[in-house]
Image (tube, rainbow, N blue to C red; front, side, top):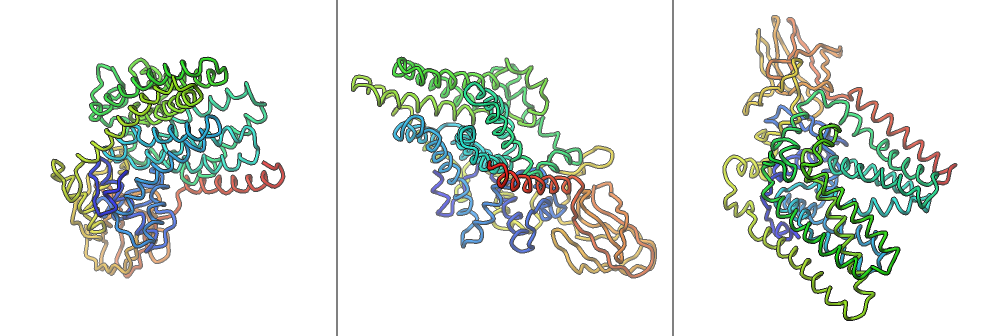
Length: 533
């Protein structure tokens, strides 16, 4: 657990700077400006802005924004955001497992999942906060799927869950869908096709429910540099296990986790076979769980490269080893099946509990070592240089226009090139040509109002990256925007006095998404009343 953060410490994980920056600006626009869905972060990229939350799922930032209503420091908010998914993954696995394997076995499996190596790596080393939340939802999703197949009223809950999952972390959702949909279809062996199709429909309706996010996130990708994500750390091929090109920057940390899971898989499968060999029902569950684990492991190795090449959308996952989140859930099920069988056997089989305990202690030791050795903001150790300076600014001076945003969300020029890097210290408004006097009457995240007096033709530059959502009005009439070579918004005026208004509006993709979301809500209300889902 990240209890050190509650005392004001911030562990210096790889992605933590981005999450702190995003949370600070998201919450500021929500609280102070009343922007309910801050898609454009106006204060990042040195004030040039970024369409970050057009593409990045906003759920975790919403939770953090709600926490900031309380008198908490940013480190305390982050501590809660990192502790919550650990609690959620334990609780959701317990809910899923206790009906099948009993309370004690479910509790042990939940404990394993809370301490599993990949979850610890995400929390304390990678700092991948939304991915950790995404993994936390997986057991609950499986449980709701089972319930929806039997009890129609749970399909509404499954729809809401599916939407929440999509708002959490898209790579984890994408990997989960590769197993989730086939799993639902395979259930036709045990349930009617009507139940199966209605359950599948509930999952898809959940994506319609959050189309206000998904539609722009998909349709507006050609406007930004998001394709660069496919090449991070050498691309997917460099992050496949055992590949000759396996050189991803984090592979030295992934390989020990892989070995841990392989050993755990062998030990737990062996124990489960021994203690459940006479239980036909558990034997079937064991077989399905083992096949699931082996398929997930295959997708992470070089032997699956052809799949990643053919199905290009899954390359947006970036790192095939992200499937370790699903594998963690699979091994937790093996853990639970083993414990359930051991507890039902005579005292002679109880020595297997020693192996179970050793697995838990080994994982606990790994978590303790990572947390103990991790650098913090108060004791950065080897963590130094520009990255440390930016992190300190993100914590202490987040709104001073001194922070960049990630490369992949920078807009593209009409030529298809990425806009040049933002320049720190640039004025909000500059007169590039002619003579003009400009007074900034209002400078909000989504609305800027200028009073301009010019005696001749003038070209004025606003320190904001152009994105199609930005619309310009001069004296209440729509006015064309010129995109500068640096990607900023520019416009021309002839002589006179002008009130210039620049506003961030709804794009066509966002309008489409909102329309789909509204229709989905209406459809769910109708279904709930008349079809008694």
